[in-house]
Image (cartoon, rainbow, N blue to C red; front, side, top):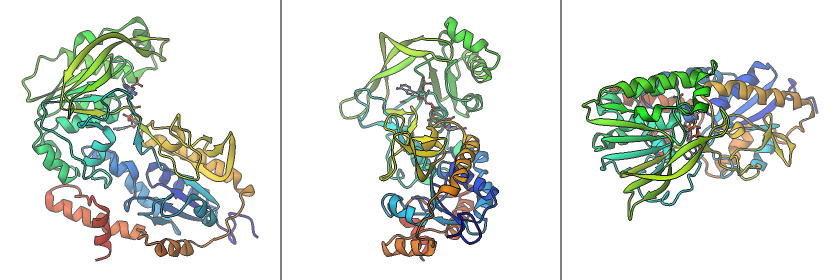
Length: 458
Ligand code: NAP
């Protein structure tokens, strides 16, 4: 057989996942300018992963990155297989029969657990559920959130927590012209939430949210940020972290928080309380969340490695809703090794490995490779590293035996799987935009798999 990656034997690559890391992997492959056959799979009928299902509806600028992904998808030979669940509709072992290399770019689809009593009490949710719900993700569109209480507690101080806080705190007027799912806008219109608590286990210097996102909490129509100046008093090690000239992240955050703390009490219908040095130790409620018990923390350790330690002193926040926003976690796929502790596919620079040995032809990029951190742009160099490893391996990769995507498409069809092509997605996209225009929104998303398929097959 001719060498892999030659005109006679184009490299056949499957990318599992069509979010940013998947598209940047595709981009890096195209840049290599080798004869290539690239197929991208997604379990949803729609591409773009967290750009569609995670980025907040009131952050439309971030979503314009999909224009770049459209250009990548326009390469000759690119094929999208949406609505195909790898590990269910087709096994990883089968996929390997059709592709020389399989790259997993499937993100981190579930949440880390808090591990406190009451975590599963009705009214206690993961941020992922809420984010998926307001973004119209089919997995979460039928979730219900009891917005009838006056207080909600969000555990965690990353950007996801801030997104959840902002969506709970904004008025319908502030959200109605975004691409928020209609069912979410309707439910939020009846929300009685007046107080939202954003709880960090460490101090203001260690908070993970970025300044741009934090600043937005100070510019809402009907909600004011509330920060206790006492909680901004720093221990000596936190002060040293703040004084580090390279620590612009914390300097910007602390300066905004100080400005919030100096504000006169606002007469707004809603308030967002940003609290520090507190960990939830119990979520209480008989049939439904009634309160969260927080333990006050101190910090211990060296600068930039400070850890929260409980003091034994507790307080209770009465609330009817809790969102745990303490980070995402990858989900295993049968046939691929999984690191239970880190919630990633174990890998060496993107080469998926078992017992420290790379497995020929299996690669990872994005959050399933490095864990759930970083913004969209961080995926570009991450995916490039994986593709470099793949291209370096190319001379030694065993060519797959079945070198025809049509055969694979027939196999899927024979199993009753309705694969969604990129042309199909464009039809969905056009219809969503048209529906949105009628409602004064950038798009009105379809939110059920059946709706997508009914549109395509009508
Ligand atoms: P994250 O930034 O890692 O934040 C997780 C938060 O959970 C931290 O405050 C962390 O505190 C806290 N936490 C973890 N375990 C905890 C526990 N057991 N008890 C209490 N608190 C706990 O994660 P994320 O918010 O899910 O965001 C994921 C990535 O997506 C981030 O890189 C984020 O910047 C990015 N993102 C960006 C945007 C944007 O650009 N607008 C929007 C959304 C998400 P510690 O610091 O103490 O660990």
